[in-house]
Length: 178
Ligand SMILES: CC(C)(COP(=O)(O)OP(=O)(O)OC[C@H]1O[C@@H](n2cnc3c(N)ncnc32)[C@H](O)[C@@H]1OP(=O)(O)O)[C@@H](O)C(=O)NCCC(=O)NCCS
Image (cartoon, rainbow, N blue to C red):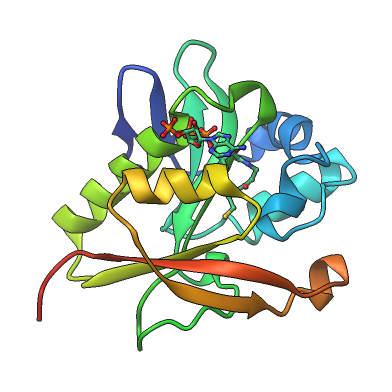
C-alpha cells in the first residue's frame, strides 16, 4: 500500500529496506527504545530485519522528515504495538517514537494527529488504547494533546525486553460512540 500522510514538515509512509541505515542511527540510541519498552538496535542488519518483520504491515509507518527525506521515527497501531494493555476486544494499541535530535519539536504530536485523522477517515475503529511508563511524561503529553484520556495504571510484563516490570499509565481515545 503506497498511501502516505503528509504535513509541511513530516510524511508518514511505509518503511523501506533502504531506511535501515537511518533506523539504526536513531534506534541504536539507548535513550530511545528503553523508554518505549524495547532494546536499542545493535546493528544495521538488526534494523533491516525489524523493517522486514515488525514494521512490515499496513498500520506501521516511518515518520519522515520532509527536508531530508530521512526516516526519523516510527508510528503505528495494532499488533506490532501490543504490550499487554487492558484493551477492549479488538481495540488497537498505538505506539510511536522519534529520534532524539528531533525531540521537543512537536513531531510525535503531529504524527499522532495525522494517524488519528487517517483512522477516523478510513476505519470503523471505535477507540484506541496506549500507555507510557509512568516516568515518561513527554509521551503522556503527546497522547493528551491528541485527546487521549487517562484510564488508570497497569504493570507491563517487560521481562522479555528489559528484565524488569514497570508501571504504565494507560490512556484511551474514544473515536466513535456506540
Ligand atoms: C516521548 C516522545 C515520543 C515525544 O516525542 P516529541 O516529538 O518530542 O513530542 P512533542 O514535541 O510532540 O511533545 C512533547 C510534549 O512533552 C512535553 N515534555 C517533554 N519533556 C518532558 C518532560 N520531561 N516532562 C514533562 N513533559 C515533557 C513537551 O513540553 C511537550 O508538551 P507541551 O507541548 O505541552 O509543552 C519522544 O521523546 C520519544 O520518542 N521518546 C523515546 C521513545 C518513547 O518514549 N516513545 C513513547 C513510548 S510510550
